[in-house]
Image (cartoon, protein in one colour):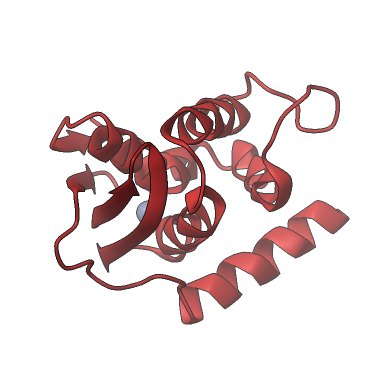
Length: 149
Ligand code: ZN
């Protein structure tokens, strides 16, 4: 097992057990629901904006360990970012898990999110990993809800 894979396993388990920002935001400026029917992952993302900055972001819902860990790390990654920066991260994350971006050789801002490059080896899990990002994107762009199907 590669080092990245071990880090991937450990991080997923840790965030699944203790998800960050797992709560509702009262008076959220933006919300969206995301569903991944293939796995049964369902979550709602809440965003509080301060001008064009993501002042607070949180999520609630249920799903597999990967979807929950990814949502947990997504909230950590985009808090304090501008909407444009969040859009860039969404784009890079999506490309990473679908094989369009090599985290080792292509410029990116993914930082700790790089561990999700590991889902490339598990195609059925790609939608689990990207669900929270699609849902955040829907919230930031007022799309309301998304389904990965
Ligand atoms: Zn899942």
